[in-house]
Image (cartoon, rainbow, N blue to C red; front, top):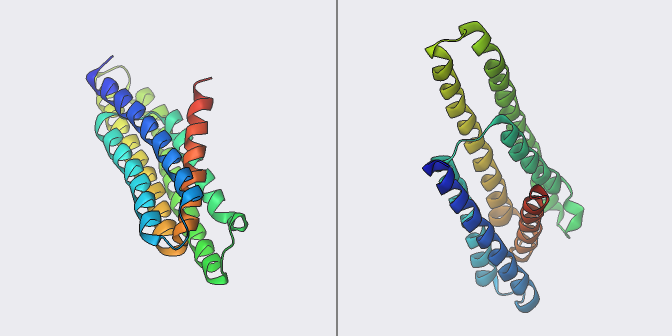
Length: 197
């Protein structure tokens, strides 16, 4: 196991632990704090989002990602996009509904661009070794693609955090933001458990 892989595994397990702790804290806040305690609701939400952002930055430094993992990452982002679209789960004002719909449209456009970049990279990875042949150029080409794939993952990660922050900071009420983060965190932990099977 390389140092990079070891570092990624360690940061991933730490992030899972943080997500479990965040979920417990979010659930506790939902059952013990009133909607009027805006400062506490905001602080808990920001901590959860910061943990996600920190993990994604750490992952981008320590670990590249292959195309299959990238497809999985994009599928998680699409699920979040679907959740943005299913605004009827929360009582939203007409203005919130309009803002959520606009954010959903922009998110889908960004997802499409990221998916298109991934598809182009996959085509290049499939074709270039055949064109280059068995030479030193193959390793260089594959390394360039690994870096490019990692950049696409970083962009998908940034989009996920940007969408969550936009929802929590600018569209939803503090209490609605906590409800969204509970659903999102549960989803990530469920995907993790499913992936271990």
